[in-house]
Image (cartoon, rainbow, N blue to C red; front, side, top):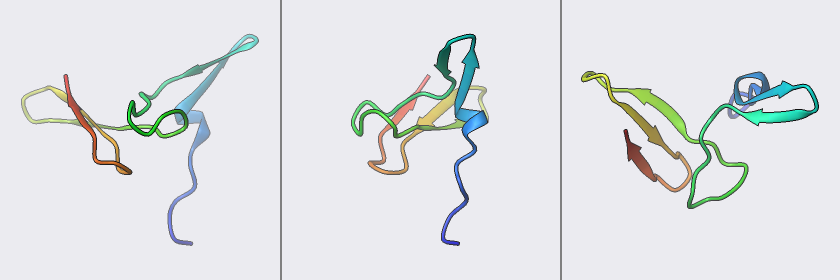
Length: 58
């Protein structure tokens, strides 16, 4: 196995008849590519796309 399988219960949540996305999607790569969430030492959160290397600090 080259990589770990995706844990869908960490990305999507079912609420009644609707599906809610829990993770942020990459604006460059488009739908279906989710960004990793990293916590920095100063308390800020950094979102990172492993496919196109797009980074957002909040």
